[in-house]
Image (cartoon, rainbow, N blue to C red):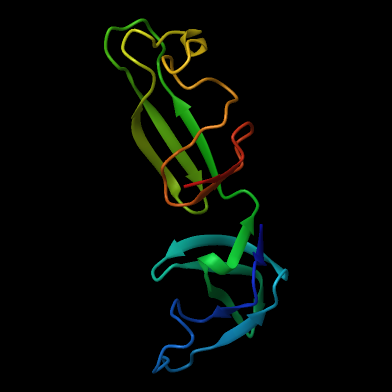
Length: 158
């Protein structure tokens, strides 16, 4: 997995604005030029609009650093999405499970519904806006910034 600086930015020892005062004792920062990339093990969202990143190769004897989310881009397998539901003809909405698994989330499962009453059976997705989520189609999911590498739905979702 890679972290790439979108603009000139800093890796910091704490998830705070490096211009804040006073800075905590032992506060460190490492500059990253715009376009510069580094290899990371994982990235997790933390407070104050930052990612906690674990570097593959420590810098200044430190593996864990913090980067401001708007200043960086993350590339690699972060989150995988899977929607499952039992398809049967029904007059009411059926519930399925939407599971996100990966570095940013661990594993999270959400109860989800898909389709419209009476339109949840194999092939119903061909009726526009009525059936369950079709296979191999781009999805828009209202979540706080996950990158999906799942084949057929790759990209950032917000």
